[in-house]
Length: 253
Image 1 (cartoon, helix red, strand yellow):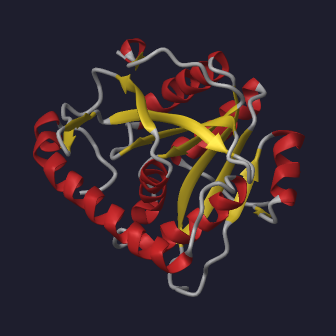
Image 2: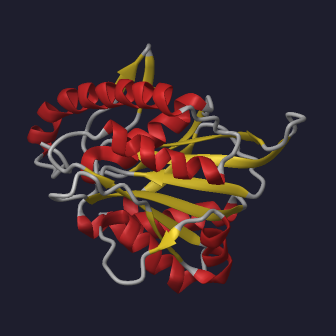
């Protein structure tokens, strides 16, 4: 039952003007690779998990730590040259995509939780199939509300004027528009036939414009993204037996 979905907080949160970055599996796994990179690079702390009886029955163990299927990380941001902390950063990530009937309840749960924790902007990351054009590298963006549309201009992002955004990002945009929640979706070109670390790195370069404290050097970034990709791929291999037993539909197989 969808009403059994809830957020379990491992610690009491005290966020301030937080930006929430969401990366669920998409084309080339670019969004999952990118969010996992942000968590590692900024040393964010696991603060909560999203729980549902309809999620796959597994947990990943990494360096002796339990990693639930869908989790929330948080930490302070360093936003000026003096090293002073300002707004908080929240990252929500997962190695699986929930079935369609859970997407709207999940999105509404995240929006409600974000509002209760002073999260004023939600940024979702999504991959888009580059098809037969390997030279396609342009990042596109979609935003709700005038404030977020101005942010696109500020960060030099090209707005998608015609098209479709599917999956969790698509539902987040429509619910954000309905509930007057500021949402931005970044769409990064990626290869559909394998995990695309370089596509994730290009997406991260745009995220870094919004998070200047996320210091990015292209070549080390590509190498680190490939490392994160390998870890994700390893986790996916561990997940497959549990996924088959539970008859859950994962995004990759």
